[in-house]
Amino acid sequence: MTTTAPRRRSSISDVARKAGVSVGTVSNVLNRPDRVSPTTRERVEGAIAELQFVPNGSARQLRAGTITTVGAIVLDIGNPFFTEVARGIEDRLAEDDFTLMLASSDEDPEREARYLKLFEEHGVQGVLVVPSGDDIEPLLELRARGVNVVLLDATSPVPDISSAAVNDVVGGQLAGNHLIQEGHTRIAFINGAHSIRQCGDRYAGLLRAFESAGLDPTADLVEITASALNADGGEAAMTHLLATTTAGVDRPTAVFCVNDLVALGVQRTLRRAGIEMPGQMAVVGYDDVNFAGELATPLTSVRQPTHQLGYRAADLLLSEHQQGEKFRPEQVQFQPELVVRASSSSS
Image (cartoon, rainbow, N blue to C red; front, side, top):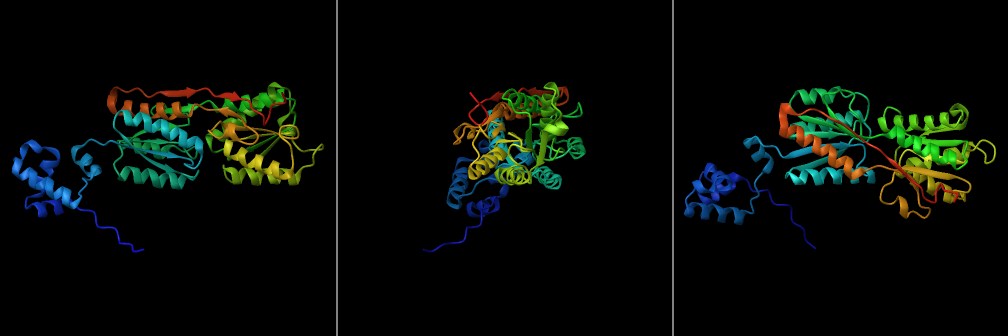
């Protein structure tokens, strides 16, 4: 089997030389064909076909002053939650013929800053950002330089920036109430860093559930910070919990996980240890991603309206672009719901 190196992409100058015309004439054929004689236009179009020339859309947008690209930075593209949110963004952008550039911050503010710089250099019309920390000053500075900004899956702390989020305090409370109503009085919460807004809010909601039930969170709640908000992080956290507690003595009888990927790792660990769900350990996740109901033990999860979240955030961004100074920033908040399945229900 033989391979060949990729051919250099043809430029507008290559087309002009091939057709024996100026670069300006090629540009007119591409953008204002009525200004070019039929004979010349036919010659240029023949050169375009022969060279397989594809116009540089980004450069053309910059010259015309019409940018139709939007950047989005999420915590982890590998998390199905953000994949579903991205689909909502993409569907709304497509309605106005905008395109999406998507990146992961991996919960790293420095990585987030690099992508913000890259998007700005590429001349995006605006950015949708799931903040990796509490500091939004870089986003305010970006907005001051003319790039529209919308916070995604986070409520804006300032009135000048729009946001679309889900009430994660309510979500955490829903999960806690459910487990307590199922008879669990000692619960573990496998969480991420509280500097991540979603993690802090879900913990706050869980505390509300404990306090409403008259339980002491300092004695009855065991919080473990996962090394990563994915299945491997959940597996490591659950392995640690099993190794450092004793069944029937100090081990929790239920685990609330900050997201469904973490819950996937938790379930994997419990099955390997021979611990039955929910009889010996109940498990609740968060997000209700597409695989949650398909697991060997279907996962109880707090459902977020993922598509609506992405769609609405993109709509806010495009509305600001279209309305300009007339636009009034909005803080949109969706409500979560609990979907009960076999991993936590005794019935």
